Length: 160
Length: 160
DNA sequence: GCTTGCCTTCCAGCGCGCTTGAATCTCTAG
DNA sequence: CTAGAGATTCAAGCGCGCTGGAAGGCAAGC
Image (cartoon, rainbow over all chains, first blue to last red; front, side):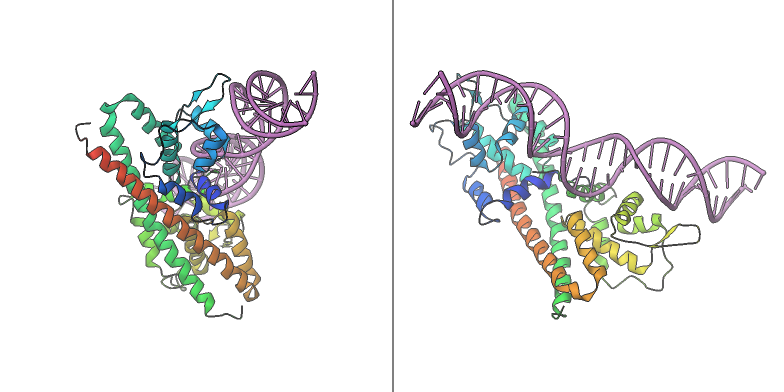
């Protein structure tokens, strides 16, 4: 088990709001990928974009530094996240939440920017990621059973 | 997302063997907790114990340093993992695999060593952990759907 | 004009969970 | 007797993904 830095976005995202399980995840789920973000809407500031996808603004700067999203700048040098940038951010944060590493995400985005000829490799990356998610789901299901089993043994001794 | 070090055991465990998804997890699943480990069997060396639970030997030393398992020593100072130690190791590695942090695990084990009066708090820890696992399962299910959706969009353009 | 607040860049530091290296000791086989 | 594999301790280092601080620019309200 290498350092679970990948778990942390999840933890932070979920630790916040009132409904720790639903808020961000559900909000993101509402946007069915390339739908639901109005292309004509005014671009967002970094603070607005951060709020929108549920991560801190410095994380967006970090993602930009990693080459994952490169928003335009206004005349003062401020970032302006347009609809395309927001769609990509939604994708990125979802993939991070799925446990995809920054390394793979960098590779994937680099391919996206290279054009349609890279679609086969992109598909392969997503296939692999899908398999990892499925494997992880199996692990977690087993872990859930184990935990529930243990809880039941304690429930057999409710006096403590 | 803070560093996901918690993902690393999982990754390492699953990256190894021939059947990357099944081997260790299934082996561990076979041991239904406090069953299936022969109390009368000879104690294991650190290398054997490591192999048994599917982690490197240094990790077992690390766990010991963290107070999670304290095997007896033979006359030469070598560790001897007895049945109880092995059962605990199985528990520990499963809980790590479920995403439980070292911090919580330290707390939990400390309570175990304090005796039966700590059972209510132990149960609470496991309840919380169960909730985290369930939440994570929901997230991953959503991420899986997103990934599969994306794959389908690529499959619509099989020429690349 | 000045304060307040959000923006900028750059770079260093952190938290987690191991992982590795160095130096040394012990057991087994030949 | 000796070589080699495997054990020990201690402390330092790593990889990942942010996170925070310093130093300063820009915009809006009083």
